[in-house]
Length: 367
Figure 1 (spheres, rainbow, N blue to C red):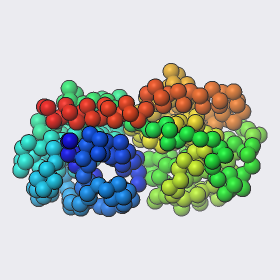
Figure 2 (cartoon, helix red, strand yellow):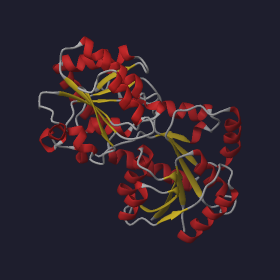
Figure 3 (cartoon, rainbow, N blue to C red):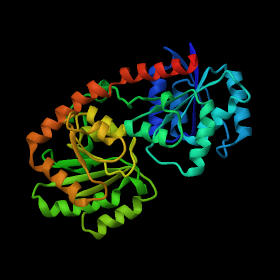
Figure 4 (tube, helix red, strand yellow):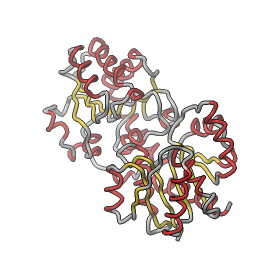
């Protein structure tokens, strides 16, 4: 059985952590014996320890941290690790440098962003590329950006994130969201569960709701779940615009399925996305989607999928017009709901993802 060390700088509660946890749940004890190392602890450490995964803290101070690389190599010797799977540039470089101390080690890197690197980083990427075994891009634009950032295209494979549709099955009767918020069954509920950070677009999303109130007579509520540095400014914006009757903040929630099942539509307003777990989870739960035409969102929401609408980032007119269509055209809403469920089965199904990812591991080991 292949021994894989999952390496992550911050083990919190965002999409990358969900990616690691899902891989461990579906690969551990079947094809992979999983281990985990991290720099800053958080919710993911708790969840992996509950699954019986050995976890160890490893301080990683910078990209070119040879002390951390040496410690990582020692940890790999102790646990007899065959392959390291890492997810951000700092731990990626640390894993590649660990080969200096343990040459037989293999490294797979998943890139979770579609972001251009600066000239210095592109140069160091090209220098580190000779140590690289295999890379995963979670969307097509992600692969294009990795190549532009200096990595060899022939060792990059696109593997879309995926979800287990069975885990998100069920109907509205299983949700307590509307009861909790005092919302009637016929109220149209939109959900956004992104962290409150600059690139998630909450400011323009709230501006979009202000315009939506002027262009539709259909009663609606936008539920904003999550926490983050811009939570309080977002609350202040809602109050200043007089939107407290139709925008509700519910904080960070672990019962995300409960939120999906109580909603009619999922909304993504982000500036940067690779391939969002929140979007495909919402679709698996039967929600149509409005998403910004950024990053890998077009790999999910497109004409072929028929699961929702793409909108222009930071454009309240584009966003509010899309919302209005879903509010007022229930046939279109249902059509997109069916498209969402179909697209998950065809393109973002968990077992296909596991097979593809394990195939990348094998390519790296055999390189």
